[in-house]
Amino acid sequence: MEGNLIYALIVRDQETILCDYTKASGNFEQRIMEVVGNINPTVRETCLLGNFNFHSIGLQRYLFVCMADKQYPSRVAFKFLQELQDSFYSHINENDRENANAFGLNKNFRKVIKEKLEHYNTLDADNLMKVQAAVRDVQNVMIKNLDRVIDNNIKIEILQDKAVAMKMKSEELKKNSRKVYCIQCTRNFKITLILIITVILAVWLIFSLVCGFNFHCLSD
Image 1: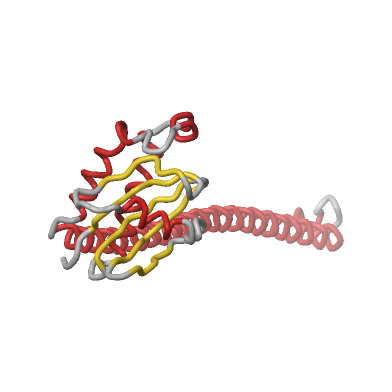
Image 2: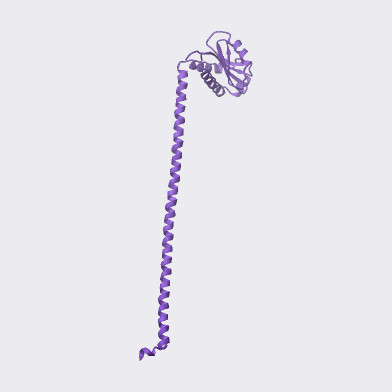
């Protein structure tokens, strides 16, 4: 990876350097404060001055700034600043942040800046970010595939529920069919019985009218 991170610092209210680190020699504080005064603390910003880029991100009253060679990738510089910001809020409590004098947090936080700056100046830093991005892409694909599997499982469960419901409905129809069949058979039996009784009564009535109710014609 071309270029290097040269200098990093944390500024409160765009005027008080709370902590900084560089292994290079030079009056970086004075030069960088000329830039800090013109930085918009509410946005990520890159300012070019001479052969150097000044990258910055802000949060609340605090500004996180680094100075890098022009060849140093901006996205890596902003990744460095984001990690620096996260570590700052994790390591330094609000009371210390608010009440620290100029360079008052160097004792507590300069080592963290040094470690991160040296890490991001290694040749593997950019490659590491690419690998991390690739891993995130793979994770996103896996999550999408998992969502599809879950969605398919839900659809299968819905189909299974529908199949169970249809089976229950079919069994219920069979039961109702049996009931209807039994009722029909009972009704047919009753009708047949009534017809038989009616025929018997009709025959008896005819014989009674012809022979008399005492059936005297049969005795003759």
